[in-house]
Structures are given as structure tokens and as C-alpha cells.
Length: 81
Picture 1: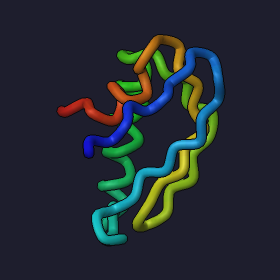
Picture 2 (picture 1 turned 45 degrees about the vertical axis):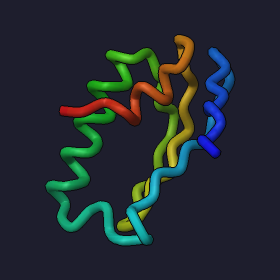
Picture 3 (picture 1 turned 60 degrees about the vertical axis):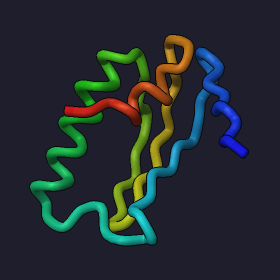
């Protein structure tokens, strides 16, 4: 059975967790983290997502975001450079 679509209600804060595959490290160096933050800033503006807070661990990320447009959180995390 396919996964149900995620709810992305406009204007409602959401706690987003992004984990490494099998709890593997997401950030192997400071440059990895800098690149992630740079991409997050750019794509959040492009897709209309306000990022209010973030906690960056080696193998996962917690973000507090507010979508400004329908499905913008999903589009943010599907974006490719």
C-alpha cells in the first residue's frame, strides 16, 4: 500500500525530522552542514517555507517550519540541486 500524502496546512507550524538512511551520518564535515544550510535557505525561499528553528545533529535534523503555500514543505524536501 502506498504511503498517504503528508498534510501541509498553510500557516500551521510543523516539526520536520530528516534522518540519515539507517541512522547513518548526514554530515561528515562542517562543509556538509554549510552546504545543507545554504540549500535549505535557497529552497525555503523558492518554495515558500519559513524556517524558524533548526537543530543539526550528525545523523538527523529537526526543523520548525511554516508553509506559506500548499505542499511547499513536501516540495522543499524533494528539491534537487
